[in-house]
Image 1 (cartoon, helix red, strand yellow):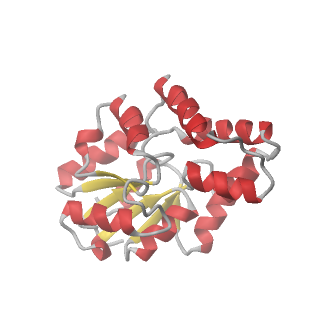
Image 2 (image 1 turned 45 degrees about the vertical axis):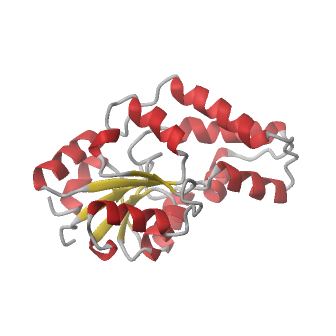
Length: 218
């Protein structure tokens, strides 16, 4: 792969290892609202969606969500994340390598800015990114490419010269629609439903963050 002029990261599951506990919380909440789903099925069908998008899709699938459920879920999720979430192993060294190579990087997430402030703030890395952007705040969540187009602008780079790092098909579609090259991070190997959905989009997978610098030509 040609060395990119900028790298654009998703947040949850790519930089911060928050996806596992958050997905389990979704599954628990939906089960109490009449929509029991195996974790793998939830991941295959809902990964990468905003909480509001999950609520709409789950309601269409038969969940009986009470009024105010979205706010209730955000409160529970933020409490969960405030208890502490680790970085994805190896990601700090990736950022170090990008800094050493003089390659700017930014973040584009479907998560809220408040959530990213919680998770990134625990590790003091928010300021390392040229921008930390939320598709929600832009009123254009992924798969809309707006958040990655804005992230590329923050880096001063044409999106076609960027590489997007994503772990969901929803996010990968946003990166591809922005005109960027996309690499799919699948920490649990190539056989998961999420990995297969990334492959179906023609996205190259990698499974260890330590391998990313080599893929970027660093």
